[in-house]
Length: 363
Length: 161
Image 1 (cartoon, one colour):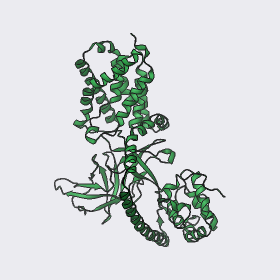
Image 2 (cartoon, one colour; image 1 turned 45 degrees about the horizontal axis):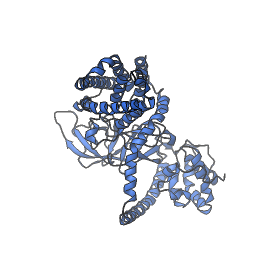
Image 3 (cartoon, rainbow over the protein chains, first blue to last red; image 1 turned 120 degrees about the vertical axis):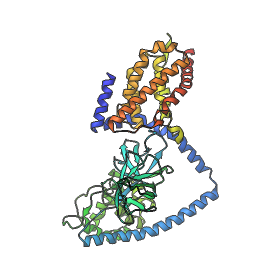
Image 4 (cartoon, chains in turn orange, red; image 1 turned 45 degrees about the vertical axis):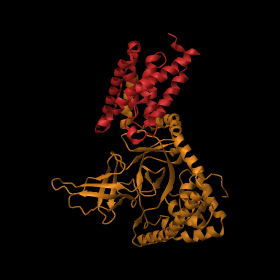
């Protein structure tokens, strides 16, 4: 009986996704164990944090302040560049890709499979996480969400032997695929010919092909190039930029991979972008205006589009409800600069997701 | 036998502890040889109290282990079911075995489960076999006396009350 049942389960799971609901239910039973196992690590970290000396904290604070100042200045520039980019693309009647939304997830220090590079984080479908979402850290691409459970999700690292990521050499745009090696500090590039223009030190960035990973994020640095004249392909290894074995915080990214074209007439985007500055000014004058956006954001699970639509409504560009989460990230910088409630969160959109639903609701 | 008293809660508690050990973050050199604690504990209970821990329990716990370790559904369920079936068949004989002989039996149980797991993995997608894949079998066998003593203490402490 049990054998038949398990074989049936094996076959069903292998061929379809029908059992995901059952897995989610069972994971609710098992997930407390994951948090329980993670508890000692968290306690140690917290204790270490609470007994750190005052001067060390002061130093760190100063350093972080400096870093934040520099980053903010850089972001200002980035913002104008992004707008310029969008304008130029609009001139070319081209399409552009929208920004991303981020969610900070913390690693649960548990080890599910010793032979695979899979980690578990503490954010699941409750936070809108879904499979195949890209995961980053401050230095580069970490991996992708492999399975999302209600309270946790499994992330396959880019170094997993079963993982491949489409990359591009930053120097010359050469496209290839980086395959995991099973070791945390190594990626292989098995599909390049002997005469490929690539050399040690080249930065590999995501190419955006394949649709899972947004383009332009650093992935790895080429560290070894050994031409093998007797074989069709060259043996190249690269070191991932992300600190795969040292990081506890990861960023889960929502990105809309399908580009939005600017030239189609009924599309609400182009008026939207031009009305960006007026909208921001409006918000600066009436701070309560921003509250509506936030309140609505908290209600719709993975939106951000709600904030957008309220801004749009105020500036008079009426448009039908856009697909969720598309425009929010590039809307976010404007909101942060206005110094409204949103500015309190360093990673605007990421923290927004956690904002309580009832901050203010005056609409 | 007086074995019928063990509360199911106590058995579950040991299995939960085994599950915690299973996913605990060992240092990388130990992670490769982390034995299948859940199976070892299950084997002990199925031999000691076969009227309490049966095929169905093995299957359910296997299913939970599948979810816990993020495997394809049914992989551990099938493995645990088969191993526990053998243990239940032989439980009377196994109780008479001295420890070294038990260890030999455990070794073959673990080897069988590992072969089955590899086979199931290989069906889904071709997997490569490394020598370290068999390490948990050896460490599991080495750990068996520990588990045996510990669980025996758990079982007998209950009886004395």
